[in-house]
Image 1 (cartoon, helix red, strand yellow):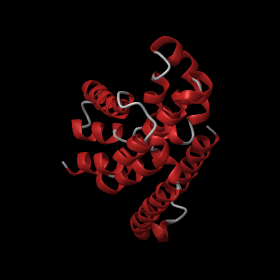
Image 2 (cartoon, helix red, strand yellow):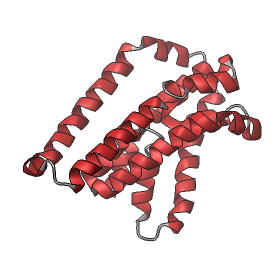
Image 3 (tube, helix red, strand yellow):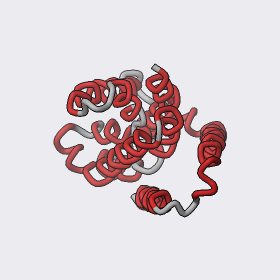
Image 4 (cartoon, helix red, strand yellow):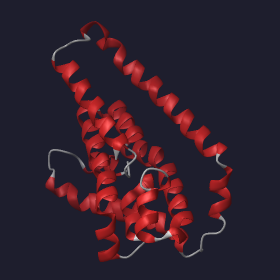
Length: 201
């Protein structure tokens, strides 16, 4: 949760700087900086996944039936977003699906969406995905009690292999750690493809 609050803090600072034109002379370079920051982020995500051989080994021990959980999370999220899109007539269905496709991975999805659809929708994506992570962190015990011990994993989305993993382990048991890591890995991997697909449609 601390990392989420830090991200929100930087967003607020950036908004303040933009409102008062404190970097007026640098505005023409901001889109270029965002693109290179995105490239660097994708590179380090790849390095992180490629260097952690334990992730790939642990995936082999997951029950074949439970391997469907990431697909259920993705389908459920996109289905829920499609229904919720009716509440936001000012945004297209593809805008809403692009935001939903972040699956809690706010740092990556918001940069992509800002690059493709503008800063306003990128801000919505940032806040929506931070809220998803916060719900997973704060409400995991209630979610597990009401909907079963696998439900916090789905709610956590792409974050279940890192930031929400300790909470999920606490409320759902240590035996779901491998499933949670696998789920986070696969959902995390889908984010850049789904977000860019819906932004390009």
